[in-house]
Image (tube, rainbow, N blue to C red; front, side, top):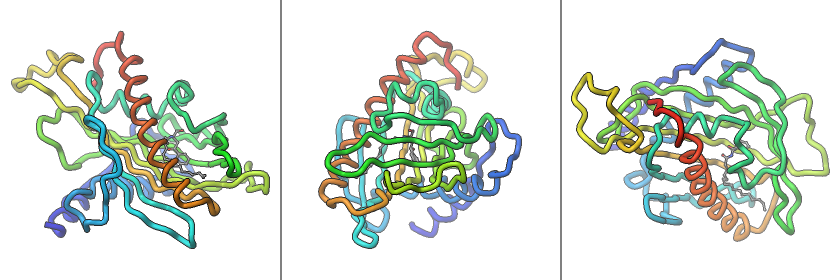
Length: 262
Ligand code: 16H
């Protein structure tokens, strides 16, 4: 089945949410192009290296144990299903910096370095120090877009949305010896699932009670320096689980009083 899956993933195309193009458009396209395919590579039927690390209700967290130069860089992938909101609403909420600190437990503070367009922003983040290791910082570009031709789960309505966050360098924040520069590539892909039959043309009758958001979250983290493997693995599993739970409940609350946007 592998060549077939590859052919399907090859067809995925991303469309900018708002545009216009900017100086980092080629870099964004390169990352989103690669990551949008990577996120959909199946964990269950793949090369067998993915292990289920944690399961809690609809949430599943998988990891592949991997070390580079002695540093743990385990790829992580998670799936979750969140009731009462759409794919667009979830991605919008994850992308929105103004509510980030409501759910983001790993960040102490952040700064916008560059607003490239409404759909692309560069950030500098200071992460909370994990005792006893050195504090981490990150510089990354965050981009929100729609994916076309992505594999559709059963009972999906509307479009596939994605937020892609990838580490980059920025002249205004050189690497210093005070902190360790960690690097991450993250993809959050969301699709709306409907739990009742809707006749074609009746889409406007869909309400919040009818929908759930299916999330696939993939993260490749390099802590940027040696830390005890067991510590990194424990923290990674704990933080990705906490993150999924927290952002799900915060996003559900945030959209509660608003009309559904599919
Ligand atoms: O995606 C998450 N947060 C985003 C919004 O703040 C930013 C993130 C990002 C940050 C920097 C660069 C690119 C992307 O996307 C939620 C993150 C959830 C945590 C995932 C697992 C973290 C594993 C940490 C292991 C580090 C060990 C530290 C050494 C002791």
